[in-house]
Amino acid sequence: MTTLSQIAWDDTVLPFQLDRSDVRGRIARLDGVLEQVLAQHNYPPMVEALVAEVALLTALIGQTIKLRWKLSIQVRGNGPIRILATDYYGPGENGEPARIRGWASFDADRLDPDAPPFAQIGEGYFAILIDQGEGTLPYQGITPLDGGSLTACAETYFAQSEQLPTRFELAYGRSILPGQGERWRAGGVMLQMMPAVAGVAREGSGEGGLLRHTDILAGEEDENWVRANVLLDTVEDMELIGPGVELTGLLVRLFHEEVPRVFDPQRVEFGCTCSAERVRDSLAIYSAKDIGHMTTEDGKVTADCQFCGAHYEFDPASLGFEATVNPDGTPKAAADE
Image 1 (cartoon, rainbow, N blue to C red):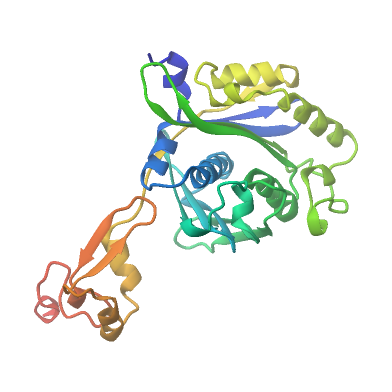
Image 2 (image 1 turned 90 degrees about the horizontal axis):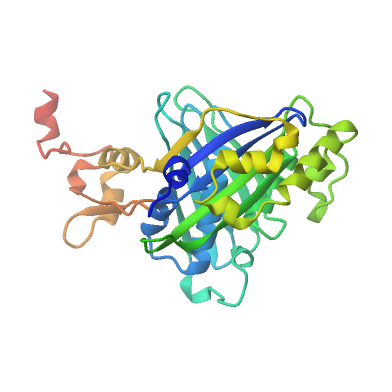
């Protein structure tokens, strides 16, 4: 039986602020959207776990930024798990859901079933990219992979690139709800010191001198940050994943002494922006000779979306800057007259 708290809070991000501590945060719970992200591919369990972790981080981080378009997280390494990529699309209008998509690239033959998932990414980087759409310059921040988890990498990113103390507590995995089959669920809390009170960074305590969230604050702000983190340490995995605990109830349970204040929740859903037109646009820079090298034996150019698995087929004569026919098959010369 589906509970009321599940209906109210699954696939939702709840923003809040702790007025006593000058700390802001987000609580997120993902159910259907995470299941849809993972259902697009047949990933091994260790790859599924990493995609679930980075999708949850994306939901939490994406909601902290006033986006006109897209926030992306990219993780690249030299190990068997080569790429983890997620996109968060901000809502187009008030009241609309945000959208999330994600995928992974890996070498199945090199995966070690006895090694921790994060270790199989190898050496590489964690990057956040923000694209506010047409007329703006995209922003990109990159930090090395560090700390033993994607969650630790995200904390290092904010400390190193933004000098904002940031903490995440996440839980994710397969669960079985009454009357339903096994499916993925995830939940997490993000804490971040308000930019106006964030202090000056001291020497980094991470590997290679990278900053941690504990390296930045000093004085009263340090006490506030430590106190909020001690309270967050008491959270349990089942409280994060739910669905028996409402997000507002969890917030009060954890931080009632810090005077929590909540804002409008944001719904999230799975969404992909791929289309035949976008594929055509991406191929517009190629010559007819280049398009010929992409053409299959049966005379088609094909493309598959890495995020949602959509399959596209094109007449090669309609592609590239030397195309001779329009997408509908009519001769270009006739259409231009």
